Image (tube, rainbow, N blue to C red):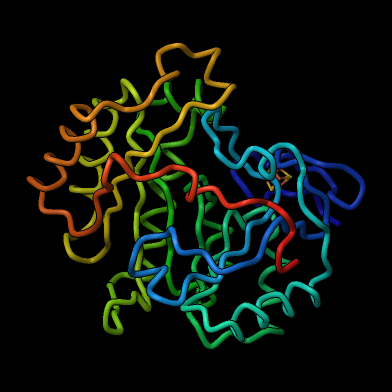
Length: 290
Ligand code: SF4
């Protein structure tokens, strides 16, 4: 196997015998494949999103709520054929879409599985936004809905909290490429069939950077051609203990300032009730459906 350069880390390791930053080998590892009702309403609908949580991650966020799978290796290795069956089983349950959570480091295997499964429902690429344009081009025609985060503009914050100083320069280009592939919103009733939803999680003390994120989106993309999902459920993890400035929830004032600016700029999309119960956002990684 050639050295892996699927993501911006470009570790160059042969993943049949070694692991890179994402800590995964050449077999796909999945922690859960089940209906999920806690995505944006146009993704979850009434029947749920067919969410497949992949183990490993190319980012290293200290506030990651899925650490068990992103860094601690929880999950089961499956063949490409088994992954195709997992996709088909979800589809049989009547889900509105197949929602691939953090799939980048398994790009070739997932594309093969999609080729075998031939899903009739939209495929969602649910990602932290830290993507190489070259890798995204491999997904062209296979993904109907892009669901990237845009976490930061500041190199200082992205370096400190996600171990990726180049996050914004990479993610901003990635979002432009995703939008090039899916440049408009196509709906079927209340459900999104094609398009892009950009998520942004407001961080404690990160208001100024959140405003910079909005400013970038405002200038980069036509209004109404994508959705913005502004999230408030930041929850400190034990790893946040090393960063006292983010070791707390976001205040109503901080979130509201950002939400007000998003409304002023005229973004279409979703804001979140700050009282949202946080538990439901992180399902158990118990190998259900794997
Ligand atoms: S996908 Fe993993 S091994 Fe490949 S370049 Fe990225 S972090 Fe490194």
